[in-house]
Length: 261
Ligand code: PGA
Image 1 (cartoon, rainbow, N blue to C red):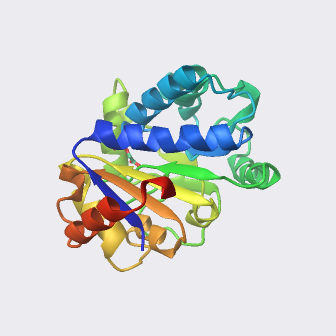
Image 2: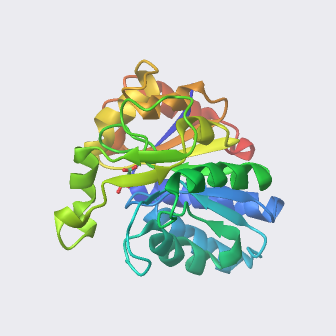
Image 3: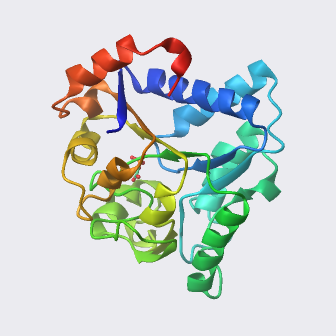
C-alpha cells in the first residue's frame, strides 16, 4: 500500500517533497533523481531550488533522468521536454547539464534512442527517487491507458485526451506532437522510491483509481501499488475520492517524524 499524505495545499505538499529530496541530496551527493514535466511538479522544483540555496547543497554530482519527451519537435522548441527540464530543473537546481538526461525525441531512430535511454539509467545505477505526476486519464509518464505494466522505455502514441490537455502549452492544438518516447511502467517501477504528486479536483478520479482501484493497464498509475516504496502527496481536492482518506491522515499524523517518507 502506498503511503498517502494529504496536505491542505499543493504548496505544502511540494515543500514536503522538496524537503525530502534536499535531505536525500545531502546524504547522497550523487543521487539519481527521476524528474517529471507538467504543471504538477513546478512548485516542488521551486521549493527544492530554494532549499538547495539555503542549505548550500552541492548538486554538481546529482544525476537526473526525465520521464518522457515528444518525438519530432524542433530543437529550439520551448515546449520540448528537453527545454522544459532545462528551464525548470537543470538551471534552478544548479545541475550539471551533462548529468541531465531526456529521451532524444529528435533522434533519426527514436526506437534505438528509447532502448539507449534504459541502458543509460542502468549505467547510472538506477533512479533513487522518481518524481511522478498523474494524468487525468491515469497515465504516468506518457504511458497511456492500455500500456503494459512491465513496459520499457519506448515510442508511444499520445492519447487524444493527453494531446488536448497539453494543447495549452502550444500556439495551435495541431502543433502537439502525436508521438513520444516515454520510460515504460516497468522502467518506472525499478526506481527505488516513487514520489507521486497530485493536485486539484480534476486528478481525484485518477488518483483514487491509482491508489485504491484494481491494478490494471487501463489505469497505468495503479502500477504504483506493485511498488514497495511509494509516497503519494495529494492536496485535499485531489484526495477527495480516496475512501481511506481518514486512515491515511491518521497514519501520517502518528508517524514518527524522524522516519520521513
Ligand atoms: P500535469 O500533467 O502535471 O500538467 O497535470 C501530469 C501528467 O499528465 O502526468
